[in-house]
Amino acid sequence: MTLAIVAPTPAAVRHDRRVAPSISGVCLDVDDTLVDYANSTRAGLRALLGADDAWADWCAVTERFYPRFTSGEIDFDTMRRQRTKEFFAIRGEVLDDGEVVAREERRMAAVQRAWQLFDDALPCLQALRDGGLRLAAVTNAAGQHQRGKLRVLGIDAAFDAVVISGEVGVAKPAAGIFHAACAALGVRVGQAVHVGDRLDLDAEGAHAAGLHGVWLDRSRCGPTSGQRRVAVISGLSELPGLITRLDGGAC
Ligand SMILES: [Mg+2]
Image (tube, rainbow, N blue to C red; front, side, top):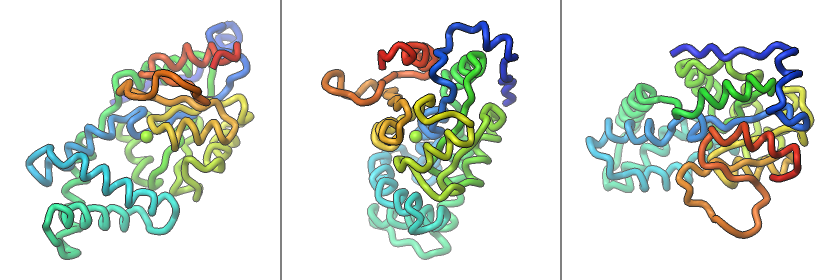
């Protein structure tokens, strides 16, 4: 897949009224925001189990082990092995280290074959580019793994900066990773938007760091009323319009 996202000319930016002048940078989460991570992860589990009945268990184990990686307690590969060992232990199967490695490699190979972008990802990136906005990918992951994913999916060149927790040493929702992204883009924190699928790690973390936080709630399962400190969208097609409205203080 090849993506021909190009930056607009200065003249094009100057005459494009779709972009609010107070917003100059947009940070985007990667997994389950641009990339259909859940679908690829389910494909990996099917490769191991021959069935698709263990999604909840996998998510629960991931929620326990992934923060140990993002906090720096263990490295990415150790997290992967420990997670897989625990996942099968829950299912009543005790694996030795060699079998853990073999199954995790088989799972990851299936995951990588299933990587795909959401349908609204490329049009959104192009619209933001056409609006003259600077773009960053901001993601909690291992550097080599995540850069490889962006490259395989053909969107590595779509960003002015790629900020990965495993490389910068700080993970969402900590303010440091959002501030690092803004610095890499050369934009002030208050002139940046961050959008992601996790209300806590992405939207609320960005808001606390001084950015405009946007929660991508693709399932539309989030609260529909009450006080919100962040904006909510149900698809990336809504993001360019939301950014325009931010200029009026509507979000
Ligand atoms: Mg995500």
